[in-house]
Image (cartoon, rainbow, N blue to C red; front, top):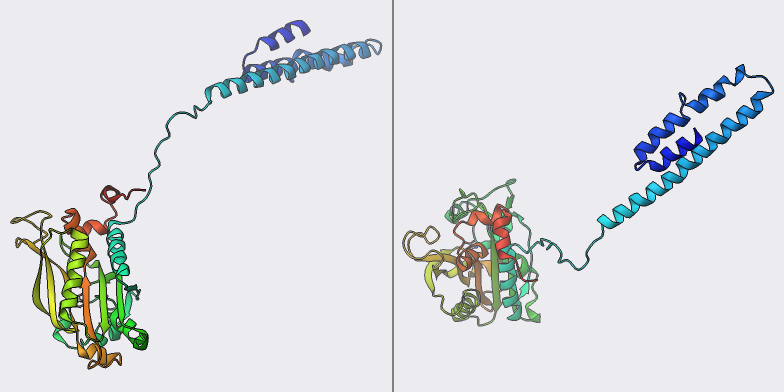
Amino acid sequence: LRQKGVQDINETDSQKQLNEIRVKLLGKKGPITEVLRGMKDLTPDERPKVGAFANEIKQDIAQAIETRLTELNKVALQHRLQHETIDVTLPGQPVKTGTPHILNQMIDDIEELFVGLGYQVIDGPEVETDHYNFEMMNIPKNHPARDMQDTFYITNELLMRTQTSPNQARTLEKHDFSKGPLKMISPGRVYRRDNDDATHSHQFTQIEGLVIDKHVTMADLKGTLEVLAKHVFGEERKIRLRPSYFPFTEPSIEVDISCFACGGSGCKVCKYTGWIEVLGAGMVHPNVLKNVGVDPDVYGGFAFGLGPDRFAMLKYGINDIRQFYQNDLRFLHQFQQEA
Ligand code: PHE
């Protein structure tokens, strides 16, 4: 039994087999247990001898199992190490990295331009008051211009800002002109109750610009806008100024950029005219200055509000504004920045 047992044990090549042998030889129904159980029928003389012998066999077998188990474990480990070796010289799997949203890239680029021109960048709340969004910007209650900016109201006084222009009033209020002129831009999200289509989104972005000093003229505004257009679109892009109306500027202009995204007739973005409006601007209305306690007879300047969404659509030939807000990674990854 001992010999056969040890031989069987040494021939096993899996832990499962080994366990089966253990149960067979040492288990409750195994031969050794049976011998030990039969001890009661033996004479007192025989008992210690048989008992000792049976226990000896039992121990030997247990020992053999233990040894084989260690061997098997070693083999298994060897096997695993061989199969799991890593070739560290293989090229790695590229890790997909994120990228700044194309609108943020556009905003960053424009911010950088203006910071270089000595502007400060300021932030304002997206949940704005009627007071700053409209009243301070010379748009009193019942003014027809409120219709131009169909508003999401939260309460009678609180609303989602329809423009970044309230940040003109917010910075002007705090500015100390004895320390120098005010030059600022203010980028951010704005909201309007528009029906979404290829060129309208109820959420979009604006960058406000404001320069107030003594002796600022419309020529300064025009020069600044030309620098901006060329910076973003390149030298060859044409811009067109049209007279317009905003309650907070006088005179007011709108700026169009020649449309090359889809070109000529049949172009959704440019509404078949070959031009797309990207910017409103003008000379700051005296009432806006009065509202913040700045003397319009001494100080004056220009303001503009541009749309990074439309800038990006034009620059990259994106024909649907809704794509900026749908978070489709296939769209967003096209604008992966170089690391
Ligand atoms: N706030 C205006 C708009 O949203 C744009 C604008 C800003 C016009 C500053 C003039 C001066 O349409």
